[in-house]
Amino acid sequence: MSWNQDEILREMEDLTVELVNVRSVNGTPGEVEIAEKIESILRGYSYFEENPHQVWTKTVDNDPLGRKSVFALLKSEKASNRTILLHAHSDTVTIDDFGSLKEWANRPYELMDKLKESDLLPEVRADLESGDWLFGRGAVDMKSGTAAHLVVLKYLSENRHAFKGNILFMTNPIEETTHGGIIDTLPELERMQSEENLVFECAINTDFVGPLYKGDVTRYIYLGSVGKLLPAFYIRGKETHVGQAFEGMDPNLIASVLTRRIDLNADLADEAEGEVTQPPVTLKQKDLKPTYNVQTPISSFVYFNYYVHQITPDRVLDQLSLIAEDSFNDVINKLNSEYKKHCERSGMEFKQLPWKTRVTTYSALFEKVYGLHGEEVNERLGRILEQHAAHMDPREVGRLMVEELLVLDDDQSPVIVLFFATPYVPRNFVKGQTKKEKDLLEKLNLLIEEAASETGDTFTIHKFFPSLTDSSYLCLDDTDEEIEILKKNYPGMDTLYPVPIEKIRKLNIPALNFGAWGKDAHKKTERVYKPYTFGILPCLIKNYCLKVLNE
Image 1 (cartoon, helix red, strand yellow):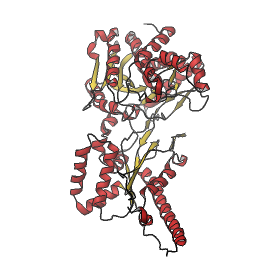
Image 2: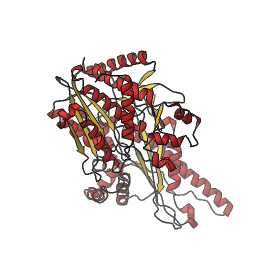
Image 3: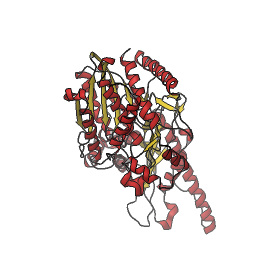
Image 4: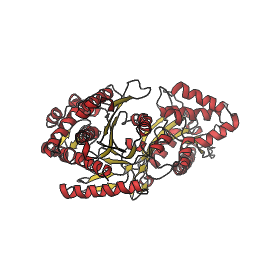
């Protein structure tokens, strides 16, 4: 097979459409179907017809749907243990956002015909009418990225003389929610590292990239990925009858002040290497009152998406504890101010309300309660995990564990408990501190210089992929001490979200992202830019593989 650009463009479009046609929505049997489709494509390559044992699948442990990761190992004619991992995720988000167009969400050409009849923003309509864009669920996130890896793998399988080493191809399910697919495959990668004696030089992901501002056409390549914590606040107030409202402490009021202080607070955006994360944003806020009555709520629950580049779990706890204390103080001051005004209007004597600011972390609360009750605490928390971990939202299980500690506490006053909940996403980037990383960066810089000269595109290297990605689980920058603080403040982490830290450390695969380029991922106008993604992206991946493996 020669690298004929016109043929590559056609093959990329055909493959992308074929993959988009499979409705592989996260949490549905379509995730199994897409794995079977990818496996079938791989088995059709002549190299794997001759070496069928080098294509295999790994079913996710204890998964009720039987979702699978797909692997293919390509070996060059010249034996070497040096290996590049090409990986992608195979699931998509739901198609509910397509509304009346759901029927065509996974049929790109028909969808584009239907969209022509829709009310579209001028930019979307211009892209639709240009012929340079392919629309459809998964078109950019990330079926076209998978197609790019498949095209490169096919070419290299027919030109095994052109490189020295191995290409390990891998697609994973369950990326769009918990990254459960790639976490499940880490033991398999460790096995390959051991049994096949593979030395992973780097991993290349093709998760989507796009404009960072209106009119941006820069092609971004990322040296790593943003991390994520999910700080959660359990707020216990003091219930009262609505007829004696000032005798209670409304946890919803505290939650609302917390949200106002944290939600989209740009000062809380983490920064490293000159790159800034998105600020924290609320993912859930609710009170825990199950039914209507005229008693005020007893407790509330709120948690935030918190991206991290370099800030550590202990610093996040310190930062948010201070905000929680300020918020609690504000609420107490507001209550006293409003109560004083109410007393003046009602002709009643005003006395300061009895509330005191009380904020604690999960680890501090656990240590206190354990000091009061000993091993009974672990037994009761263990029963909660045993009863609920398998079938309840893990964030709610963590909340129940906090509630259990508060039941055992000898102080029943209003309190904010700060803890971490599922998921934990490690942060990482290639720093150039080792010879391997320096070589990777040197070859990457050379690659984009050549590509820019040949294509006229503008390329920029950034450190952190700004959205969540499976690449986070191939290496990590958090220290053992930081992980220990995280676990102490993460109720039931080893059961609810068991990230195999030691396996990640052992693998330690530098994780790059050469993304499919497009717009509006997770929207009904999701679309991939064909000239770059179908023509230039697979060439970039192929050339980088050759540069790394042929040094």
